[in-house]
Length: 119
Image (cartoon, rainbow, N blue to C red; front, side, top):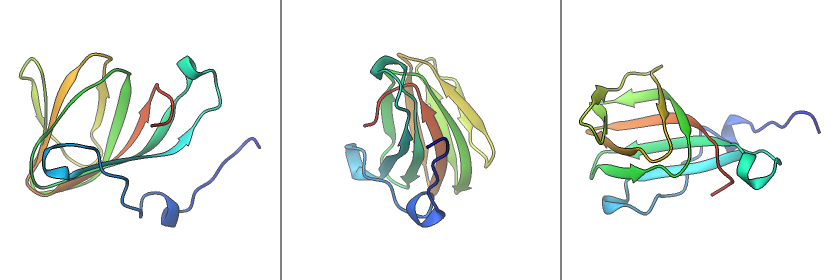
C-alpha cells in the first residue's frame, strides 16, 4: 500500500505510552515505522510532556520534533547549557549522542520523526 493513514482518534488525540522517567510525566508513542532495513528505518509519532520532573534523555539516534501545542513555560536545554523557551511551531533537531533536558510548568505536545526502529 503506497499510503497509510491514521485518523486523529488514533494519533494526536490519544495519549502516548509513558516514558520511564522520574515523575512519569513524559509520554511517547510511535504511529508509523518504515519497512526499510532496521538501520535505515524511520519512525514517527507524538511526544507529550506534562508538568512535573524534567526528562533528561540521551539520544542514541537522530530525531526531529515540531511542537504543536505548548501551555505554560516549556524549555529544552542541551548538555552545553544552550536553552530554548519553546513556542508552538518551533522545530528541533537532536543529534545522535545529544543529552537533552525537557522541562515544563504546563505541557507540550510535539510530532517527532526519528531515524530508528519502532520502540
